[in-house]
Length: 536
Image 1 (tube, rainbow, N blue to C red):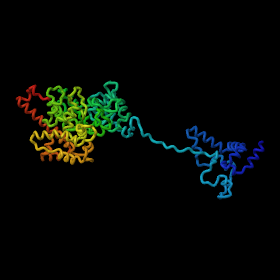
Image 2 (cartoon, rainbow, N blue to C red):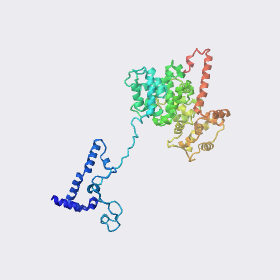
Image 3 (cartoon, helix red, strand yellow):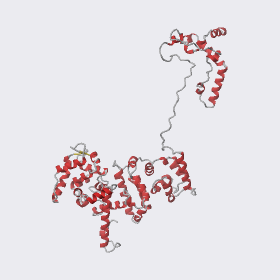
Image 4 (tube, rainbow, N blue to C red):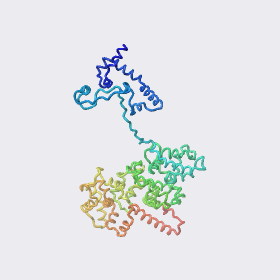
Protein backbone atom coordinates (compact mmCIF):
# COMPACT_ATOMS: atom_id res chain seq x y z
CA UNK A 1 0.00 0.00 0.00
CA UNK A 2 2.92 2.27 0.76
CA UNK A 3 4.30 1.67 -2.75
CA UNK A 4 0.95 2.51 -4.30
CA UNK A 5 0.67 5.67 -2.20
CA UNK A 6 4.18 6.74 -3.15
CA UNK A 7 3.35 6.15 -6.78
CA UNK A 8 0.27 8.35 -6.49
CA UNK A 9 2.30 11.14 -4.93
CA UNK A 10 4.99 10.85 -7.61
CA UNK A 11 2.37 11.12 -10.29
CA UNK A 12 1.11 14.44 -8.88
CA UNK A 13 1.55 17.37 -11.16
CA UNK A 14 3.02 20.38 -9.30
CA UNK A 15 -0.11 22.26 -10.32
CA UNK A 16 -2.03 19.86 -8.16
CA UNK A 17 -0.40 21.49 -5.15
CA UNK A 18 -2.55 24.55 -5.84
CA UNK A 19 -5.23 23.04 -3.64
CA UNK A 20 -7.79 25.57 -4.79
CA UNK A 21 -7.78 23.81 -8.18
CA UNK A 22 -8.63 20.37 -6.77
CA UNK A 23 -12.32 19.74 -7.14
CA UNK A 24 -14.28 18.59 -4.10
CA UNK A 25 -15.22 15.36 -5.93
CA UNK A 26 -11.55 14.44 -6.49
CA UNK A 27 -10.73 15.04 -2.83
CA UNK A 28 -13.62 12.83 -1.79
CA UNK A 29 -12.60 10.02 -4.15
CA UNK A 30 -8.95 9.99 -3.01
CA UNK A 31 -8.74 11.47 0.51
CA UNK A 32 -5.43 9.66 1.11
CA UNK A 33 -3.72 12.10 -1.27
CA UNK A 34 -4.45 15.04 1.00
CA UNK A 35 -3.53 13.04 4.09
CA UNK A 36 -0.15 12.12 2.62
CA UNK A 37 0.53 15.69 1.55
CA UNK A 38 -0.25 16.86 5.08
CA UNK A 39 1.97 14.18 6.60
CA UNK A 40 4.82 15.11 4.27
CA UNK A 41 4.36 18.80 5.13
CA UNK A 42 4.61 18.07 8.83
CA UNK A 43 7.92 16.18 8.30
CA UNK A 44 9.64 19.10 6.58
CA UNK A 45 12.37 20.95 8.56
CA UNK A 46 10.82 24.33 7.79
CA UNK A 47 7.55 23.15 9.27
CA UNK A 48 9.30 22.12 12.46
CA UNK A 49 10.90 25.54 12.68
CA UNK A 50 7.56 27.24 12.07
CA UNK A 51 5.78 25.21 14.75
CA UNK A 52 8.58 25.82 17.25
CA UNK A 53 8.56 29.57 16.50
CA UNK A 54 4.81 29.74 16.96
CA UNK A 55 5.02 27.84 20.23
CA UNK A 56 7.72 30.17 21.56
CA UNK A 57 5.71 33.24 20.63
CA UNK A 58 2.59 31.88 22.27
CA UNK A 59 4.58 31.26 25.46
CA UNK A 60 5.86 34.86 25.24
CA UNK A 61 2.30 36.18 24.96
CA UNK A 62 2.48 37.06 21.25
CA UNK A 63 -0.69 36.11 19.30
CA UNK A 64 -0.12 33.08 17.10
CA UNK A 65 -1.60 34.86 14.09
CA UNK A 66 1.40 37.19 14.05
CA UNK A 67 3.57 34.25 12.96
CA UNK A 68 1.36 33.62 9.98
CA UNK A 69 1.35 37.18 8.69
CA UNK A 70 5.12 37.55 8.26
CA UNK A 71 6.55 38.35 4.88
CA UNK A 72 8.81 35.27 4.80
CA UNK A 73 7.87 32.36 2.51
CA UNK A 74 5.39 30.02 4.19
CA UNK A 75 6.49 26.57 5.11
CA UNK A 76 4.64 24.00 3.15
CA UNK A 77 4.54 26.05 -0.03
CA UNK A 78 5.51 24.24 -3.29
CA UNK A 79 9.02 25.65 -3.10
CA UNK A 80 9.55 24.20 0.39
CA UNK A 81 8.06 20.82 -0.45
CA UNK A 82 9.62 20.17 -3.84
CA UNK A 83 12.68 22.41 -3.80
CA UNK A 84 13.07 24.79 -6.71
CA UNK A 85 9.88 24.87 -8.76
CA UNK A 86 9.60 27.01 -11.90
CA UNK A 87 6.91 29.67 -11.87
CA UNK A 88 3.59 28.91 -13.45
CA UNK A 89 3.21 30.14 -16.98
CA UNK A 90 0.89 33.06 -17.66
CA UNK A 91 -2.64 32.05 -18.53
CA UNK A 92 -4.50 33.41 -21.49
CA UNK A 93 -8.17 34.20 -21.42
CA UNK A 94 -8.89 30.99 -23.32
CA UNK A 95 -7.61 27.46 -23.28
CA UNK A 96 -6.49 27.44 -19.68
CA UNK A 97 -8.01 24.58 -17.76
CA UNK A 98 -7.47 26.53 -14.52
CA UNK A 99 -9.31 29.60 -15.75
CA UNK A 100 -11.98 27.56 -17.44
CA UNK A 101 -12.70 25.75 -14.19
CA UNK A 102 -12.88 29.07 -12.32
CA UNK A 103 -15.24 30.52 -14.83
CA UNK A 104 -15.03 33.64 -16.84
CA UNK A 105 -16.75 35.86 -14.34
CA UNK A 106 -14.92 38.60 -12.46
CA UNK A 107 -14.36 38.12 -8.77
CA UNK A 108 -12.65 35.78 -6.36
CA UNK A 109 -12.87 32.02 -6.67
CA UNK A 110 -15.58 30.36 -4.64
CA UNK A 111 -13.13 27.56 -3.79
CA UNK A 112 -10.50 28.91 -1.42
CA UNK A 113 -7.46 26.98 -0.32
CA UNK A 114 -7.72 25.14 3.00
CA UNK A 115 -4.09 26.15 3.63
CA UNK A 116 -4.80 29.83 3.10
CA UNK A 117 -4.66 31.80 6.33
CA UNK A 118 -7.34 34.46 6.68
CA UNK A 119 -6.04 37.32 8.81
CA UNK A 120 -8.43 38.68 11.43
CA UNK A 121 -9.71 42.24 10.96
CA UNK A 122 -7.74 44.91 12.77
CA UNK A 123 -9.72 46.18 15.79
CA UNK A 124 -9.47 49.90 16.52
CA UNK A 125 -9.18 50.77 20.19
CA UNK A 126 -11.64 53.56 21.09
CA UNK A 127 -10.35 55.69 23.97
CA UNK A 128 -12.56 55.95 27.05
CA UNK A 129 -14.87 58.91 26.81
CA UNK A 130 -17.19 58.41 29.81
CA UNK A 131 -16.00 58.53 33.40
CA UNK A 132 -18.31 58.01 36.36
CA UNK A 133 -16.56 60.66 38.46
CA UNK A 134 -15.64 62.90 35.54
CA UNK A 135 -12.55 63.00 33.35
CA UNK A 136 -9.34 62.49 35.33
CA UNK A 137 -7.19 65.53 35.87
CA UNK A 138 -4.13 66.04 33.66
CA UNK A 139 -0.88 65.00 35.28
CA UNK A 140 0.49 68.56 35.41
CA UNK A 141 -2.65 69.86 37.13
CA UNK A 142 -2.55 67.09 39.72
CA UNK A 143 1.11 67.68 40.47
CA UNK A 144 0.58 71.42 40.87
CA UNK A 145 -2.39 70.83 43.18
CA UNK A 146 -0.50 68.26 45.27
CA UNK A 147 2.36 70.69 45.83
CA UNK A 148 -0.09 73.33 47.13
CA UNK A 149 -1.83 70.73 49.34
CA UNK A 150 1.45 69.56 50.84
CA UNK A 151 2.38 73.14 51.71
CA UNK A 152 -0.91 73.83 53.50
CA UNK A 153 -1.00 70.51 55.34
CA UNK A 154 2.65 70.68 56.45
CA UNK A 155 2.76 70.57 60.23
CA UNK A 156 -0.80 69.24 60.43
CA UNK A 157 -0.24 65.49 60.23
CA UNK A 158 -3.47 64.83 62.11
CA UNK A 159 -5.42 67.08 59.77
CA UNK A 160 -6.78 70.63 59.59
CA UNK A 161 -9.49 71.96 61.86
CA UNK A 162 -12.40 74.02 60.58
CA UNK A 163 -10.86 77.40 61.41
CA UNK A 164 -7.75 76.49 59.39
CA UNK A 165 -9.65 75.08 56.41
CA UNK A 166 -10.74 78.39 54.86
CA UNK A 167 -7.32 78.81 53.20
CA UNK A 168 -7.74 75.42 51.50
CA UNK A 169 -11.19 76.43 50.23
CA UNK A 170 -9.97 79.74 48.86
CA UNK A 171 -6.49 78.93 47.53
CA UNK A 172 -6.73 75.32 46.38
CA UNK A 173 -10.41 74.85 45.55
CA UNK A 174 -10.74 78.41 44.17
CA UNK A 175 -14.28 78.76 45.47
CA UNK A 176 -15.66 81.48 47.82
CA UNK A 177 -14.34 81.21 51.35
CA UNK A 178 -17.81 81.07 52.91
CA UNK A 179 -18.14 77.57 51.47
CA UNK A 180 -15.43 76.29 53.82
CA UNK A 181 -17.78 74.94 56.50
CA UNK A 182 -19.98 73.07 54.02
CA UNK A 183 -16.96 71.66 52.20
CA UNK A 184 -15.30 70.68 55.49
CA UNK A 185 -18.38 68.71 56.59
CA UNK A 186 -18.66 67.14 53.16
CA UNK A 187 -15.19 65.63 53.57
CA UNK A 188 -15.34 64.98 57.32
CA UNK A 189 -18.11 62.39 56.99
CA UNK A 190 -17.35 60.90 60.41
CA UNK A 191 -17.63 64.31 62.14
CA UNK A 192 -14.17 64.00 63.72
CA UNK A 193 -13.57 67.74 63.44
CA UNK A 194 -10.49 67.17 61.28
CA UNK A 195 -9.80 66.84 57.56
CA UNK A 196 -6.63 64.95 56.79
CA UNK A 197 -4.44 65.44 53.76
CA UNK A 198 -5.37 62.02 52.36
CA UNK A 199 -9.10 62.61 52.87
CA UNK A 200 -8.92 65.93 51.04
CA UNK A 201 -6.91 64.43 48.17
CA UNK A 202 -9.39 61.58 47.87
CA UNK A 203 -12.34 64.00 47.68
CA UNK A 204 -10.85 66.76 45.58
CA UNK A 205 -8.41 64.93 43.26
CA UNK A 206 -9.34 61.25 43.18
CA UNK A 207 -13.02 62.02 42.70
CA UNK A 208 -12.05 64.52 39.97
CA UNK A 209 -13.65 67.55 41.62
CA UNK A 210 -10.56 69.43 40.48
CA UNK A 211 -11.53 69.05 36.81
CA UNK A 212 -15.11 70.36 37.16
CA UNK A 213 -16.13 73.93 36.37
CA UNK A 214 -16.82 76.14 39.37
CA UNK A 215 -20.62 75.99 38.96
CA UNK A 216 -20.57 72.19 39.06
CA UNK A 217 -18.17 72.21 42.01
CA UNK A 218 -20.43 74.50 44.03
CA UNK A 219 -23.51 72.55 43.02
CA UNK A 220 -21.91 69.26 44.08
CA UNK A 221 -20.76 70.67 47.42
CA UNK A 222 -24.14 72.20 48.27
CA UNK A 223 -26.62 69.54 47.19
CA UNK A 224 -27.69 66.57 49.26
CA UNK A 225 -26.11 63.22 48.20
CA UNK A 226 -29.21 61.66 46.67
CA UNK A 227 -30.68 64.80 45.13
CA UNK A 228 -30.33 66.16 41.61
CA UNK A 229 -31.25 69.73 42.50
CA UNK A 230 -30.80 72.41 45.15
CA UNK A 231 -33.53 73.54 47.52
CA UNK A 232 -33.72 76.61 49.74
CA UNK A 233 -32.40 74.72 52.77
CA UNK A 234 -29.14 73.99 50.92
CA UNK A 235 -28.32 77.72 50.84
CA UNK A 236 -28.79 78.40 54.56
CA UNK A 237 -25.37 77.07 55.73
CA UNK A 238 -23.64 79.16 53.07
CA UNK A 239 -25.42 82.35 54.09
CA UNK A 240 -24.91 81.62 57.77
CA UNK A 241 -21.16 81.59 57.27
CA UNK A 242 -21.35 84.69 55.05
CA UNK A 243 -23.13 86.55 57.85
CA UNK A 244 -20.50 85.46 60.36
CA UNK A 245 -17.44 86.29 58.29
CA UNK A 246 -18.24 89.12 55.86
CA UNK A 247 -17.01 92.52 57.12
CA UNK A 248 -19.99 94.30 55.54
CA UNK A 249 -22.44 92.31 57.67
CA UNK A 250 -20.69 92.42 61.04
CA UNK A 251 -23.17 94.99 62.38
CA UNK A 252 -25.94 92.36 62.20
CA UNK A 253 -24.25 89.92 64.58
CA UNK A 254 -26.07 91.39 67.58
CA UNK A 255 -29.45 91.01 65.87
CA UNK A 256 -29.83 87.32 64.97
CA UNK A 257 -33.47 87.84 63.98
CA UNK A 258 -32.49 90.16 61.16
CA UNK A 259 -29.61 87.90 60.19
CA UNK A 260 -32.22 85.23 59.54
CA UNK A 261 -34.43 87.66 57.60
CA UNK A 262 -31.50 88.78 55.48
CA UNK A 263 -30.58 85.17 54.64
CA UNK A 264 -34.20 84.36 53.75
CA UNK A 265 -34.46 87.39 51.49
CA UNK A 266 -31.27 86.51 49.64
CA UNK A 267 -32.53 82.95 49.09
CA UNK A 268 -35.93 84.18 47.85
CA UNK A 269 -34.23 86.53 45.41
CA UNK A 270 -32.00 83.74 44.14
CA UNK A 271 -34.91 81.42 43.46
CA UNK A 272 -37.01 84.20 41.94
CA UNK A 273 -34.46 84.93 39.23
CA UNK A 274 -32.71 81.57 38.88
CA UNK A 275 -35.38 78.90 39.32
CA UNK A 276 -37.23 79.55 36.09
CA UNK A 277 -39.33 76.41 36.46
CA UNK A 278 -40.75 77.89 39.67
CA UNK A 279 -40.82 74.52 41.41
CA UNK A 280 -38.38 75.34 44.22
CA UNK A 281 -35.77 72.97 42.76
CA UNK A 282 -32.72 74.70 41.36
CA UNK A 283 -30.98 72.50 38.78
CA UNK A 284 -27.37 72.55 37.66
CA UNK A 285 -28.48 73.85 34.26
CA UNK A 286 -30.28 76.80 35.88
CA UNK A 287 -27.28 77.48 38.11
CA UNK A 288 -24.94 77.60 35.11
CA UNK A 289 -27.21 79.87 33.09
CA UNK A 290 -27.61 82.43 35.87
CA UNK A 291 -25.30 85.01 37.43
CA UNK A 292 -25.26 83.64 40.97
CA UNK A 293 -21.72 82.22 40.83
CA UNK A 294 -20.30 85.57 39.72
CA UNK A 295 -22.23 87.31 42.52
CA UNK A 296 -20.83 84.84 45.08
CA UNK A 297 -17.28 85.44 43.91
CA UNK A 298 -17.84 89.19 44.06
CA UNK A 299 -19.26 88.91 47.59
CA UNK A 300 -16.15 87.02 48.67
CA UNK A 301 -13.80 89.69 47.31
CA UNK A 302 -15.77 92.89 48.02
CA UNK A 303 -15.87 94.27 51.57
CA UNK A 304 -18.83 96.56 50.86
CA UNK A 305 -21.77 94.18 50.66
CA UNK A 306 -23.97 96.88 49.15
CA UNK A 307 -21.88 96.92 45.99
CA UNK A 308 -23.03 93.40 45.18
CA UNK A 309 -26.34 94.42 43.63
CA UNK A 310 -27.27 90.90 42.62
CA UNK A 311 -28.88 89.05 45.54
CA UNK A 312 -26.55 90.04 48.42
CA UNK A 313 -26.99 93.81 48.89
CA UNK A 314 -28.08 94.63 52.42
CA UNK A 315 -29.69 97.87 51.25
CA UNK A 316 -31.91 95.91 48.89
CA UNK A 317 -32.93 93.63 51.75
CA UNK A 318 -33.65 96.67 53.89
CA UNK A 319 -35.96 98.14 51.26
CA UNK A 320 -37.89 94.90 50.79
CA UNK A 321 -38.30 94.27 54.50
CA UNK A 322 -39.33 97.84 55.34
CA UNK A 323 -41.91 97.86 52.55
CA UNK A 324 -43.37 94.68 53.98
CA UNK A 325 -43.25 96.12 57.48
CA UNK A 326 -45.14 99.24 56.35
CA UNK A 327 -47.97 97.18 54.85
CA UNK A 328 -48.13 94.64 57.71
CA UNK A 329 -49.82 97.05 60.11
CA UNK A 330 -50.57 94.46 62.79
CA UNK A 331 -47.08 92.92 62.42
CA UNK A 332 -48.29 89.34 62.34
CA UNK A 333 -46.02 88.77 59.35
CA UNK A 334 -48.95 88.39 56.97
CA UNK A 335 -50.60 90.93 54.71
CA UNK A 336 -54.05 90.73 53.19
CA UNK A 337 -55.67 92.15 50.13
CA UNK A 338 -56.61 95.36 51.95
CA UNK A 339 -52.94 95.84 52.86
CA UNK A 340 -51.49 95.21 49.42
CA UNK A 341 -53.88 97.67 47.77
CA UNK A 342 -51.99 100.41 49.66
CA UNK A 343 -48.69 99.49 48.04
CA UNK A 344 -46.96 102.34 46.22
CA UNK A 345 -49.48 104.94 47.42
CA UNK A 346 -52.44 102.94 46.07
CA UNK A 347 -50.84 102.60 42.67
CA UNK A 348 -52.35 99.19 41.81
CA UNK A 349 -55.90 98.48 40.71
CA UNK A 350 -58.28 96.27 42.64
CA UNK A 351 -58.59 93.91 39.72
CA UNK A 352 -54.90 93.10 39.55
CA UNK A 353 -54.70 92.70 43.34
CA UNK A 354 -57.59 90.25 43.14
CA UNK A 355 -55.68 88.21 40.57
CA UNK A 356 -52.61 88.13 42.83
CA UNK A 357 -54.64 86.87 45.78
CA UNK A 358 -56.32 84.30 43.56
CA UNK A 359 -52.74 82.99 43.36
CA UNK A 360 -52.81 83.01 39.57
CA UNK A 361 -49.18 84.06 38.96
CA UNK A 362 -47.81 82.02 41.87
CA UNK A 363 -49.18 79.82 44.64
CA UNK A 364 -48.69 81.36 48.07
CA UNK A 365 -46.46 79.50 50.48
CA UNK A 366 -48.41 81.11 53.28
CA UNK A 367 -50.64 78.59 55.08
CA UNK A 368 -53.11 81.30 56.14
CA UNK A 369 -55.98 81.55 53.70
CA UNK A 370 -56.32 84.94 52.04
CA UNK A 371 -52.98 86.12 53.41
CA UNK A 372 -49.63 86.72 51.76
CA UNK A 373 -46.47 85.76 53.64
CA UNK A 374 -43.06 87.39 53.48
CA UNK A 375 -41.73 85.08 50.75
CA UNK A 376 -44.84 85.75 48.64
CA UNK A 377 -44.31 89.48 49.09
CA UNK A 378 -40.66 89.25 47.99
CA UNK A 379 -41.80 87.65 44.75
CA UNK A 380 -44.46 90.35 44.32
CA UNK A 381 -42.20 93.34 44.92
CA UNK A 382 -39.48 92.01 42.61
CA UNK A 383 -42.09 91.46 39.90
CA UNK A 384 -43.59 94.92 40.42
CA UNK A 385 -40.36 96.91 40.56
CA UNK A 386 -38.35 94.98 37.96
CA UNK A 387 -40.96 94.53 35.24
CA UNK A 388 -38.54 94.26 32.27
CA UNK A 389 -37.01 91.06 33.70
CA UNK A 390 -38.26 87.76 32.30
CA UNK A 391 -39.58 86.38 35.63
CA UNK A 392 -41.59 89.58 36.07
CA UNK A 393 -43.00 89.45 32.56
CA UNK A 394 -44.12 85.86 33.17
CA UNK A 395 -45.65 86.86 36.53
CA UNK A 396 -47.79 89.65 35.14
CA UNK A 397 -48.66 87.87 31.90
CA UNK A 398 -50.32 85.12 33.94
CA UNK A 399 -52.28 87.75 35.86
CA UNK A 400 -53.67 89.40 32.74
CA UNK A 401 -54.33 86.11 30.90
CA UNK A 402 -57.82 85.62 32.31
CA UNK A 403 -58.59 82.33 30.55
CA UNK A 404 -55.07 80.95 30.83
CA UNK A 405 -54.77 80.13 27.13
CA UNK A 406 -51.34 81.75 26.68
CA UNK A 407 -52.51 84.77 24.66
CA UNK A 408 -53.79 88.22 25.62
CA UNK A 409 -56.76 89.40 23.59
CA UNK A 410 -58.07 92.99 23.35
CA UNK A 411 -60.99 92.01 25.61
CA UNK A 412 -58.61 90.92 28.38
CA UNK A 413 -56.56 94.08 28.04
CA UNK A 414 -59.69 96.21 28.14
CA UNK A 415 -60.92 94.44 31.28
CA UNK A 416 -57.91 95.71 33.24
CA UNK A 417 -57.70 99.11 31.57
CA UNK A 418 -61.31 99.99 32.41
CA UNK A 419 -60.41 100.52 36.06
CA UNK A 420 -57.42 102.64 35.07
CA UNK A 421 -59.68 104.79 32.90
CA UNK A 422 -62.11 105.25 35.77
CA UNK A 423 -59.32 106.27 38.14
CA UNK A 424 -58.02 108.85 35.65
CA UNK A 425 -61.49 110.37 35.45
CA UNK A 426 -61.73 110.53 39.24
CA UNK A 427 -58.36 112.30 39.40
CA UNK A 428 -59.53 114.79 36.76
CA UNK A 429 -56.85 113.50 34.44
CA UNK A 430 -57.54 113.63 30.75
CA UNK A 431 -58.71 110.07 29.95
CA UNK A 432 -57.12 108.12 27.14
CA UNK A 433 -59.58 105.92 25.29
CA UNK A 434 -58.88 102.21 25.15
CA UNK A 435 -58.77 102.19 21.35
CA UNK A 436 -55.90 104.69 21.41
CA UNK A 437 -54.13 102.82 24.21
CA UNK A 438 -54.48 99.54 22.34
CA UNK A 439 -52.78 101.02 19.29
CA UNK A 440 -50.00 102.37 21.51
CA UNK A 441 -49.46 98.97 23.15
CA UNK A 442 -49.44 97.19 19.79
CA UNK A 443 -46.81 99.63 18.53
CA UNK A 444 -44.69 99.03 21.64
CA UNK A 445 -44.85 95.23 21.53
CA UNK A 446 -44.87 94.80 17.73
CA UNK A 447 -46.34 91.29 17.96
CA UNK A 448 -46.25 88.67 15.24
CA UNK A 449 -50.06 88.75 15.10
CA UNK A 450 -51.71 92.05 16.01
CA UNK A 451 -54.95 90.32 16.98
CA UNK A 452 -53.39 89.04 20.19
CA UNK A 453 -50.23 89.18 22.29
CA UNK A 454 -48.07 86.25 23.35
CA UNK A 455 -45.47 86.00 26.09
CA UNK A 456 -42.66 85.70 23.55
CA UNK A 457 -43.80 89.02 22.06
CA UNK A 458 -43.32 90.67 25.45
CA UNK A 459 -39.88 89.12 25.96
CA UNK A 460 -38.66 90.63 22.69
CA UNK A 461 -39.75 94.15 23.66
CA UNK A 462 -37.75 96.48 25.89
CA UNK A 463 -40.88 98.47 26.81
CA UNK A 464 -42.96 95.41 27.68
CA UNK A 465 -42.99 96.34 31.38
CA UNK A 466 -44.61 99.67 30.60
CA UNK A 467 -47.50 97.88 28.89
CA UNK A 468 -48.40 96.29 32.22
CA UNK A 469 -48.09 99.67 33.96
CA UNK A 470 -50.63 101.04 31.48
CA UNK A 471 -53.06 98.30 32.45
CA UNK A 472 -52.90 98.37 36.26
CA UNK A 473 -50.34 100.83 37.76
CA UNK A 474 -51.59 104.37 37.34
CA UNK A 475 -48.69 106.13 39.09
CA UNK A 476 -46.07 104.52 36.86
CA UNK A 477 -48.25 105.02 33.80
CA UNK A 478 -48.51 108.77 34.42
CA UNK A 479 -44.80 109.01 35.32
CA UNK A 480 -43.85 107.41 32.02
CA UNK A 481 -46.05 109.80 30.06
CA UNK A 482 -44.32 112.78 31.71
CA UNK A 483 -40.78 111.48 31.99
CA UNK A 484 -38.18 113.65 33.67
CA UNK A 485 -35.29 114.39 31.25
CA UNK A 486 -32.88 114.16 34.19
CA UNK A 487 -33.98 110.59 34.92
CA UNK A 488 -33.68 109.70 31.25
CA UNK A 489 -30.11 111.00 31.17
CA UNK A 490 -29.33 109.18 34.39
CA UNK A 491 -30.54 105.90 32.91
CA UNK A 492 -28.31 106.37 29.89
CA UNK A 493 -25.29 107.09 32.10
CA UNK A 494 -25.85 103.91 34.12
CA UNK A 495 -27.05 101.35 31.58
CA UNK A 496 -26.01 98.38 33.71
CA UNK A 497 -28.48 99.22 36.48
CA UNK A 498 -31.84 97.50 36.32
CA UNK A 499 -35.16 99.09 37.21
CA UNK A 500 -34.98 97.24 40.50
CA UNK A 501 -31.52 98.67 41.24
CA UNK A 502 -32.77 102.24 40.66
CA UNK A 503 -35.92 101.68 42.70
CA UNK A 504 -33.99 100.17 45.63
CA UNK A 505 -31.53 103.06 45.64
CA UNK A 506 -34.32 105.67 45.71
CA UNK A 507 -36.25 103.83 48.38
CA UNK A 508 -33.22 103.31 50.60
CA UNK A 509 -32.48 107.03 50.51
CA UNK A 510 -36.11 107.80 51.35
CA UNK A 511 -36.24 105.31 54.20
CA UNK A 512 -32.92 106.43 55.67
CA UNK A 513 -34.04 110.08 55.56
CA UNK A 514 -37.30 109.19 57.29
CA UNK A 515 -35.41 107.31 59.97
CA UNK A 516 -33.04 110.24 60.48
CA UNK A 517 -35.99 112.61 60.78
CA UNK A 518 -37.64 110.25 63.24
CA UNK A 519 -34.49 110.13 65.34
CA UNK A 520 -34.28 113.92 65.31
CA UNK A 521 -37.92 114.28 66.40
CA UNK A 522 -37.18 112.06 69.38
CA UNK A 523 -34.40 114.40 70.44
CA UNK A 524 -31.66 111.79 70.29
CA UNK A 525 -30.67 108.87 68.16
CA UNK A 526 -30.27 106.84 71.34
CA UNK A 527 -33.87 107.36 72.50
CA UNK A 528 -36.53 105.25 70.82
CA UNK A 529 -40.29 105.35 70.90
CA UNK A 530 -41.44 101.76 70.67
CA UNK A 531 -44.62 102.72 68.81
CA UNK A 532 -42.61 104.34 66.03
CA UNK A 533 -39.65 102.00 66.02
CA UNK A 534 -38.39 100.86 62.66
CA UNK A 535 -37.74 97.12 62.23
CA UNK A 536 -34.07 98.04 62.39
